Image 1 (cartoon, rainbow, N blue to C red):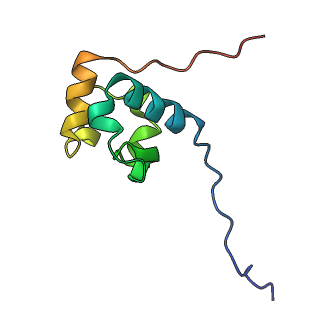
Image 2: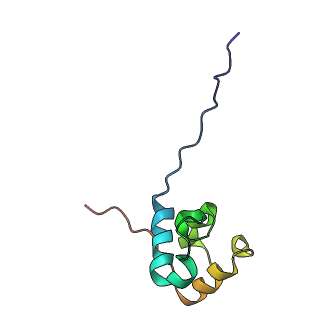
Image 3: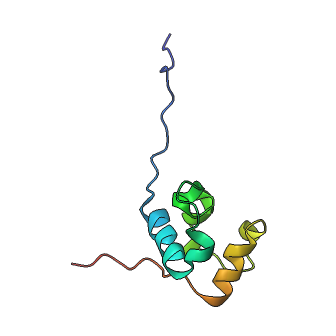
Length: 87
């Protein structure tokens, strides 16, 4: 009988987009998103799950119902979308 591995395989996640979105927030509104460099979400205070998809969210998205500051930011400033591969 085959045994289960001691540690199940984990999904590999790329945090590059989350880092870029966090940097954008901190550059555009440092008084709100760059106050504590030890805060979650690369120092923005925004959860990682939101940072990873922030460029796709609209200000009234249900994902932002507990993130009023992010929602207000998105009403004023759109987060740049990823650009295609450049050769």
